Image 1 (tube, rainbow, N blue to C red):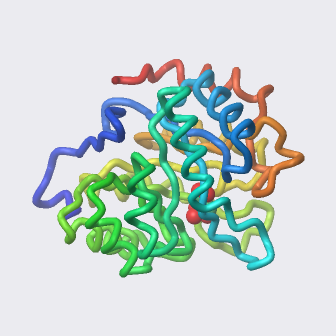
Image 2: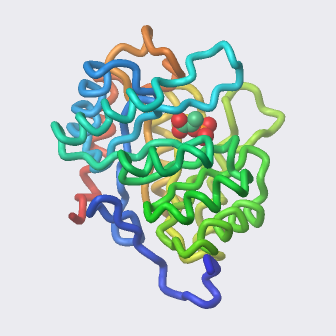
Length: 263
Ligand code: PEP
């Protein structure tokens, strides 16, 4: 279903009216985690000023340590819905449990499946049945074939509104959080008709790598990028070191100016 063999035209997925597909580069930005209403609104306004047309923000955070901030849950979803109301930006947020899909889908415009759940087949089937567009991150150790087969689980439930997201893979290199596999962009686009975006924040794991990796993603043909921004990253409860701050956003806006949103 996701193979390009039977579907030679590349697909466009619409999220609350915003297209992600071959004719533009869509910027999705916002905080890694929803922490407070003020922080989420500030981050959303920063994102919008930089050219974002979709807001990201995690209310359910799949953390490596069970002692790390796990997200605000439904209270975070309510904050995201309020910020959507205020900014007009449709919301992309992660769901980590098949039992939460209905609840998250009642607030979100797009459901994100993260790298740690990239082969959680029950979750993939549940988001496939949700009626919402899905952003499927590549598993940190998944081959491209495994990633596309994960997308097939979503598609099999009747949902072809799937966007693939390359977010870096695990290699021997420790200087970056993950190694951005730029080649995954043209490869996945050749094998599948689905849009392919890149997460330069979770790949590099460092603020100063985000803009160079964004340029690399766009040069490789990515249909969008998803970027963490935070008004006060030193106080962030999650992934502060990779969040862009106000001072970085003029440069991001300049990169995005070349790709005016097709609304
Ligand atoms: C995220 O985007 O919030 C996230 C946790 O990303 P990943 O699943 O790629 O680690």
